[in-house]
Length: 210
Image (cartoon, rainbow, N blue to C red):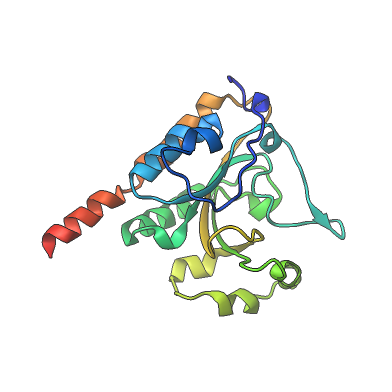
């Protein structure tokens, strides 16, 4: 389909594994090639969205305050497992964070960030606690949950309320509206994929050096 507004959402459990057999069934068309490329590079993707619902403001609110898991409002997105990234790609993501977040997209969510470092709720019951801590601007709840300290991630993390994602994720977002064409979203995320290192090559190089 030519426009994102014409693509129906695919019902798929976030965090479920994506492989070559399932990719064309569970990934929306504009994201198939970028996600295929990332998976071939050894980069684990755990969620995505590029459908008509992403072109509008489908706000979830508690007490009239936006709940912060709506990173798909007016954005197509791909979610990667941060802890499965190589050290080289973590550095690349840090560079992307600094570059792309200088010019924020028009969104009230995550201050319009294009690259988001997210710490997620691993337990359904933690959602309201997470929301309370977020509202108060406190960090203690997830400071305790962070198992491994990556300084840049830790300093720039946001709260993503999603129980089915890994504990630490990186979300790449593409601003979209009802006039956005599918091809432009594919090209946008292809650019991200081309910027990252092939982790399989890194792994093979490291094995050869041993």
